[in-house]
Length: 364
Ligand SMILES: Cc1cc2nc3c(=O)[nH]c(=O)nc-3n(C[C@H](O)[C@H](O)[C@H](O)COP(=O)(O)OP(=O)(O)OC[C@H]3O[C@@H](n4cnc5c(N)ncnc54)[C@H](O)[C@@H]3O)c2cc1C
Image (cartoon, rainbow, N blue to C red; front, side):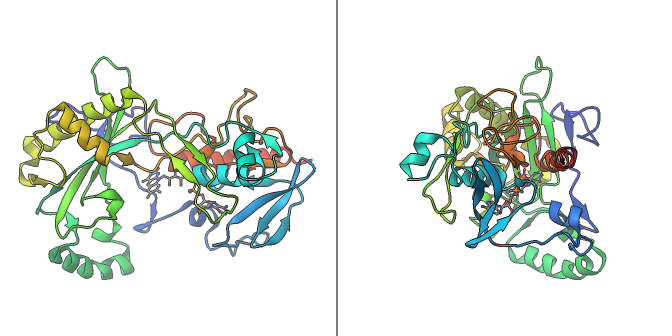
């Protein structure tokens, strides 16, 4: 409020703009995932068998019709169709391993080309994000410091028994959708406020409590790509996120980082002043750009690599069927033609629901 942003108690309501607390995907104080939310423990579904921890190596075809998948060297055959939902990185990888992708790239790796689909793996979009981390000791903040570890240990009982207490936190508890310039007609930046520091996705831990204010570009112009590193599914694919390749994304993220500085300097946060993990907070634009180049990264919303569209180059059609072959759909975040202006988990679940409806509708 002190920085001119209004309170919003429901970002998914009629108005997205404003700052407030995030809704969370939880049940009984525990984070849920789509698998448990839709299937429970799986026992209610006698027609379902889950083979966990085994990647699909490739999709099998009879002619141009998908007939099954190869898993652990075993051929699992389907009666109707194959639905790929390996995510924005895994789905293009699996399609390419199965001969559907940019022909020249597949040939380079010695893979047979079933269908030349140049957009498989292209158009990778993600919310590029810059985080201001502060080392702070103040109520409610967490870290790997001894005081927090003691608090966590004391919270385990309440969490286990009643699903209550600090361990129910999603860490990124608050945030918002804001406009970088007043004349815009909708927010172009998103904030995530975390009650602990987040350095390099927490790969780097610090013996200190603190907090982090993330800011990300909601509709990035930069595009990246996913390509195969080899013809083996166990070799991670090559991911070039293309972050900041479009100059306007850097300009907007710079503005976002300045807004984050203003928010962290607001009177309401006076008790939460602290030393920055990166930089001093007094950088000029060049200095802040250098910090952004060094530390900006994904906030985990990759999409676009099997983009849906009505045009001939689109990887899937509007009913999520892979063009150029039969009996194959993709149903995950990879099909989004453009990145949505917000978090991607619920839209990914919605894509799954639409795909299920299409499969049922299209039964012979
Ligand atoms: C750390 C993190 C935090 C996030 N936080 C949020 C959040 O707070 N809110 C929000 O809205 N979104 C969040 N997201 C984004 C959200 O999780 C994704 O947008 C969503 O899960 C995408 O769903 P999906 O079905 O496309 O892919 P995924 O959920 O990634 O599912 C794809 C699955 O396919 C598997 N797979 C890949 N290749 C193969 C193969 N060859 N064979 C078999 N299986 C394979 C993968 O292991 C994975 O389990 C977060 C993401 C991450 C990584």
